[in-house]
Image (cartoon, rainbow, N blue to C red; front, side, top):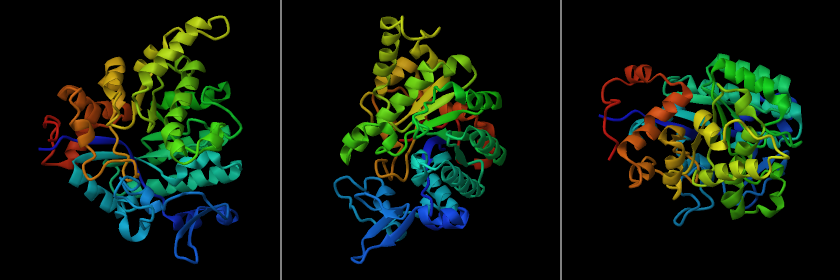
Length: 389
């Protein structure tokens, strides 16, 4: 019997032709495009200009693609598993790995909020949301999706959030740094959005985006490896800081927010740092009623690298109920063909904690009805099955 593991953060790769098929014609010249240079090498274009990616999108979509033994020139069409853009194949992969449910996030659309034009950004979000909705319609119980919501145009954000929730989205995804203009997740003008999610009972996921994002302000220092080493966790630290410092959780006590794909081991230090500044700077900051740790434990979850050396300390602070397992498939920094092993084999977590992180915590956060899932899966799966070995 297999345990119904929930992948809280898997990814798809958006087909390049999808943008031309779904975006209004006036945006075609700016859409993501892939071409071949004269020497046959891949060129990825955005706004009609080549990007600075040092590796192919095939490498990006291959777990371990940049590790020793990988290659910088993996071909998306011939060498990448079609589970990246074919829902039937994706379900086959889930069966092979013992994953009952996957909640899916984008790849190229993670950089949505770096698009400077509001109308183009909004059109991009609609195009992706339509495509991923159709992708998950193959099996809406096992394939769940996050609607991407750009926040710079609040009227659009509210309308698009309402639209994707009506279409069946399990959650909505925000960037940690939601607008190029410097608006933060704690900005008071976004309260209408937070109120909408709170009233709807829908969790919000703040997902790390383009690690080289110009919105990080110090982006000129974040080049190549530094983008991944610092840029990803730094984004989530910014997001958590503004959600807590901005009073979002205190104003919306029934709201739940997840912070994804920026590691987890730094969280105890960061929450402690926030609490320390409340005390040491009480004359110039709004000291919250609840500490940062209390707010996070009550209303937030986190997901990141399951091999993170600091994961055990994070679980000790916030509890296994506030941590979710994610495969990150098919991204190059994920683990495959056995993504479950990284958490399964940790000696610093009990079986009960692992079961919570694999199944119970994501089911609760995402409001996934496990009875419905089990009835749909049929024989061979059991909520009482042991942790996979």
